Amino acid sequence: MKASGKAVKDAQRTEIQHQKEKEVEQRMVEELVEHLKNIAPFNKRWQVIETINQGTYGVVFSVKDVVTNVQGVIKVAKSMANDSGNASAEWEGFVLETMFKRSETASVVRLLDKGMLADQHGEGMEFVVLEKAALPVKEYIFSVEGPVRRLRAANVSLQMLKGIYDLHEQGLLHRDLKPDNMGICSTEQPITLLFDLGMARMYTDGESDVRPPRTCCPFRGTPEWASGNAQKGREQTRYDDLIAWLYVTCELFAIEKEPAQPLPWTYRNNNRAHKYLKTMFCPARYLLQNTPPQYYAINLYLQTANTSKVPNYRFLADKVFEAIKELETEVEKFSRKHESQTGKLSGEKGATGIEQEKTDGEPKKVEAQMPQPKKEELKKRKPQEEKVVKEAEHPEKTQMSKKGEDSKKP
Image (cartoon, rainbow, N blue to C red; front, side, top):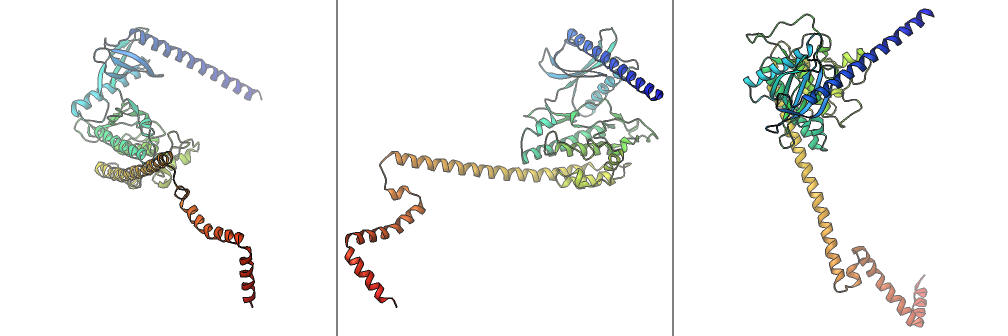
């Protein structure tokens, strides 16, 4: 009992200590944010608009160029003991700068500025200013309904694949693909851009040959969208980026913006089931239940391909393009059906208006104003009413005719 009581006290003490450390860290981050706002505009150009995110490794602001009014996103790396924050920001700036020297049409955010700032203690902090993607991917897709939403998801999937291809062409792996690390330029220009390349890694050497895989390497990425191979601590390849692309696509095709379980392994605490669902043995109908049928062939290819060979990007793009064409046909059918229904409703409203105008004019006969079924009933009633009137006028003739009919009966 004493040992267990001591263990409980130690656990409580450790928890209190962690809580204090978090509070101190949060206070330091808030001080850093206030300091950065006070020294703005950064580099005599970038004025802070709002804080997007703040965490252990740095701060992200939405900024605007005071000269050209161009909006951007500035990432300021927090100075740390091992200098990992500055190294990550410096590496990301180098990657983006190199990317656009080699390929100006790459589907990756552009580097607008970079430099060094001093924090509240006088220590150096690297910063990079990136092109701002105006819309988050999910907000763009789920702002519409029906087949239009699925068409948008397919277009985003294809453009995301193009961005991955651009990175791979330059010998880089992204290693952290997820919906939060991509965005849309604008509603007028719905071009998908990848960003957050702090975890990117060169998979080629100086002579454009693939580097030999490491026997053991630390995990990089986000577990929800990372491949099963990456989560096992193995060297990531181009196929791991493509599998993460497929997982993100599955989430974009979800029925709701925030589904209860976007992917089969979401919120599962069973590690064995989690690992199984990220292998080639995972039933495709669970993973791809909301995607177009073309993604079944994509999933089969990515799970069974030889990872030492160059991926067949053309096959993947053709399959996604095929899905886009089918969805475009669905959208056309849906729009025609909607237009025809709208036309019928407007026709009915027009007919009602004409009837009202006629009613306001000269009075019409009762028969003309009644609907068709009531006209027929009125015609049937007329001979019966005439017969009743005759019987009332000549009751003697009616009685004689009735007696004659009775005598004829057997």
